[in-house]
Image (cartoon, rainbow, N blue to C red; front, side):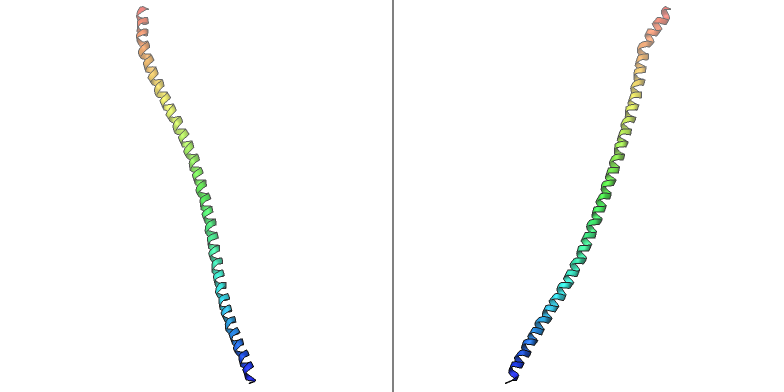
Length: 111
């Protein structure tokens, strides 16, 4: 009879030991999960920083391209303006020569 309380206590302790083992296994599982999440977080953070750096570089390249395009457009506009000005000047000179030549001939004949 004396063994009955001891056997009951032994059974209770074994149940506590099984429960403690289950809790330890669960804790180990959660620790691994936390470690994996920390690694994933670090990767995502690094990816985010790389994406931000890449975006900044793209913006800088676009701004540089925009600046070059603006300068090239201005240069092209100036070149077109100068060429058209020269062409109009030559055309006007030819017209004036055409208009004034008969007058000059007339004056030369009269003198």
